[in-house]
Image (cartoon, rainbow, N blue to C red):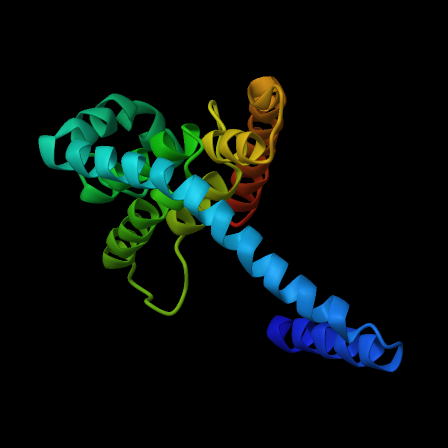
Length: 194
């Protein structure tokens, strides 16, 4: 549905430009937007590749399992339905750690793996469990200590002080995480779940 809406916006814009004799502006913007998108991708890609490679090394070396073990007391409170030594906790911990570093794209594979492991614990495969919902809330609103992607975007755009947003990002993500987890807890409690 969203694709249809955006498609209509583009079509209406092209028709409007054609009727006003500004079709050359459309051609210019198409070429300029493609160039800008490619430059942005080339600026951000090395950062993501490095972090994803480091996370792969951390996973293979067992560091992710150690992080998960350290986070188990907190995660067991947030996810009481997951057994303490279950593999899903390691992926959830990895996802949280990577999101804290501000690398949402690099956290996606761990998030997908965590959901896959949570689905294995799910008795009703057509419905999400409370652990899945809590993980989704935590993943969506997760605390970001170093907003790496935002800093690299600001740097690529020529910002004089690209790290200026760090305190604001920490405050905003902390509030969204506390708010999201509080609402999740209240809804679970209302429905008599853990």
